[in-house]
Image (cartoon, rainbow, N blue to C red):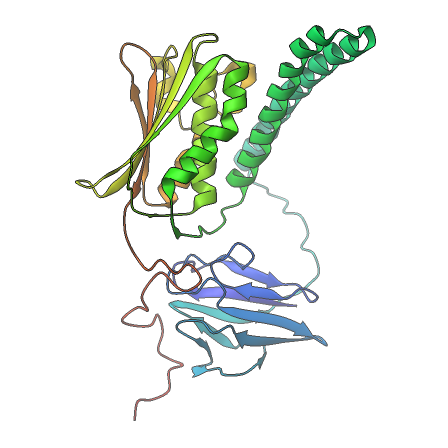
Length: 360
């Protein structure tokens, strides 16, 4: 079996195993090995196994694919010891033993404790969600047996609310556990905000909470990963709707470009009780929930991580006279909008020149 060791570039130190039966992509797209190098194209090069051998092919990348100092124009066979360069990233091809390693005898007890606490927290959240689903399902089942439509209407919101909770839990667990590369594209941020609000509207209506979206007119496209920002908004909106009081709660989302600071700003206001002072220091910490049994503590941690990976910030402040305002700011950096190509320039100097051909 072969492996790619990242010897130079933003991801230096990472290692990717190459399964003998699965083709692999080098690039920044979600299906690729996961480079964060901005000078690597989204689909930069392809690695293909065939008859126990691996072959490398460039996929019309911006800066080309280099093998042992030579730019490849056709499919080339790989061997252990070869060096591949894509953009500013240099990979070393290594032979590895496919025998599974024996478990470490001296496993880190702190790491094992952290894993145990994480599993316990998630298991507790799943148990609470299942109890809610069971309660709602029992109410609906009883209503069906009695032919009581009004009772079914009362039981269904419990089921729907817990379906929302399990959906958010799964999406946040995936985002928390897998650090996938962002796919930055010039995007209508207002449309992303409005779509997220529409998805949350039924949840807000079940709690008798008014949800209002205020998007500034004539905003330019924003350089964001639309799916990531959409998840940020769903997490912020879910928190705001749960914090707002039933039958009179109000959640307002404002989105605009702050030209002076060169940022796109999204603010989510709620008229709930606000964040208790004792919880503010751990508000964005994973698994530190202020909702008791109803929360997992992942939503705001995932939201902040996704915003910061855009180079932005996520913070909070008290609303007047009461409530909370969550503020997400994204840089309005207008780089190359072509997400199918590289977003970053080729570095002025390569990370290593030992394979470069001599200049005549």
